[in-house]
Picture 1: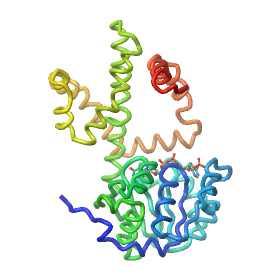
Picture 2: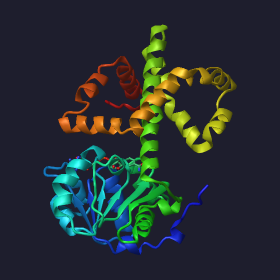
Picture 3: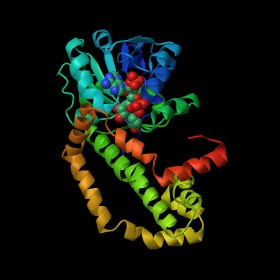
Picture 4: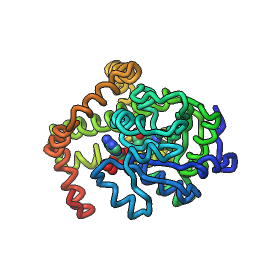
Length: 330
Ligand SMILES: NC(=O)c1ccc[n+]([C@@H]2O[C@H](COP(=O)([O-])OP(=O)(O)OC[C@H]3O[C@@H](n4cnc5c(N)ncnc54)[C@H](OP(=O)(O)O)[C@@H]3O)[C@@H](O)[C@H]2O)c1
């Protein structure tokens, strides 16, 4: 196993000396901008699309907001922290026509480079600086003096200093407090997509919804079914994060552990393996990425699905429960 690097091993000068444009002021963009400024990066501008709802927030945080074209002409490095599916458009319409030669490109997910949505010229450092986790957590952990585990990779090293810039960037957003590891664009992309599709989002949602429906079909009240199949996911996830799967099994009741061990192998049977194989094939051959970017570029992606979600009984049960527990209206 590769040993991690920590802040004590890393010189922040490469990022402190950089004129940095951050494209996008969403979860990652905002957190990175605030953390890097606190880490001594003095020249940061936020690049937003016309009419961006994030402009007010960036300005209230004290940053200069510029257009994408202006950012491309000004910056020594562009941190492209906009939605991945928009990277091709942003690159082709704004960055490529206006960029300074030698300008580094920094990403926090490998998607658009691995799938060649962007084809940067050879004069350019192309760097992955991925703090693994949701963007909001980058700032929350930084404020506690901690950070998210960081992974770095270099696809192109035109300057000969790309590694140093990647490490300085990650240290600047707090990852040096917990550990920074090397990876590749391919590994980070494939792992991230597969994990979110089959476990963290797709797998979890499929299990939660189908098990809720099955309990209700068996005559259980929607409220009780929601608690047992959806609401309590968080408690188990917290246990796994704190103690691992083996530790979670030690922490729960023996009845729950025995029941889970009885059925675990069956759930992970041949049908599930076939689903995994299909998802992995589409990730590896690029067909998932192609389909997603084409769907995005056609407009209104997932609008109908999002509206349909709210009509499902599982959502009504969750809403009712949250209103009882927290007085929440959503
Ligand atoms: N390393 C990790 O573990 C990890 C985890 C999560 C995400 N990420 C990566 O972080 C990056 C940003 O994700 P996020 O979670 O911060 O997303 P987010 O909160 O949804 O923010 C996306 C930002 O992209 C901007 N944007 C979208 N379309 C655009 C366009 N056509 N032109 C210009 N700007 C556009 C949005 O602009 P407006 O403000 O104008 O709407 C918004 O500021 C992505 O590359 C994502 O894969 C990495």
